[in-house]
Image (cartoon, rainbow, N blue to C red; front, top):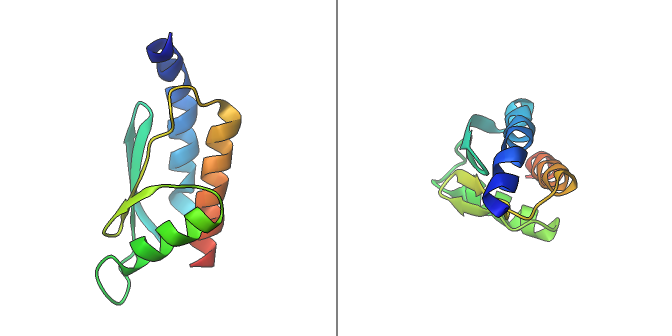
Length: 98
């Protein structure tokens, strides 16, 4: 039932991720199902902010793939709402810290 579970969790996940639109430094958000991505305002050099964000999120307890100045969030299909809340909270906190 993992695919059904993921389909049921998707609206909650996407709402939570799109709520990051007011986070400092996030310029674009997109997502489908249980995968989402967001772009960062560019830093002084290409990918500098993405690298800084990836390190900061890892230090704050979340591993998210950053490619250049874009980040990809893809929680496992066994995730629960509380995990989605933790992910979004860590992203928001980390964005404020970089």
